[in-house]
Length: 82
Image (cartoon, rainbow, N blue to C red; front, side, top):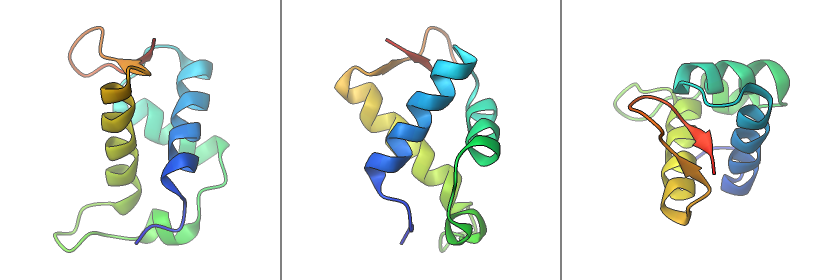
C-alpha cells in the first residue's frame, strides 16, 4: 500500500503538468520525483509483479483525473490539464 494518499498524487500531477505543460508520463514521473516530497516507501515499493509502485499510483491517479475531466490526452502518450 502506498504511503502517499491518492489526493496527494493527484496534486503532484497537477503541479507537474502546470510546470511542464503537456508532457509524457516519463516527464511527469521525473518531475514529481525531483520536485515533490515522495515517500521513500513509494519510490522503493513494488507491486507483486515487480512494477514500480510510485509509477503505478501516478498512472492510476491520471486515469481517475481523465475520467473526471481534469486531464486530457491531446495525442497518444501525452498528458495535459484541461
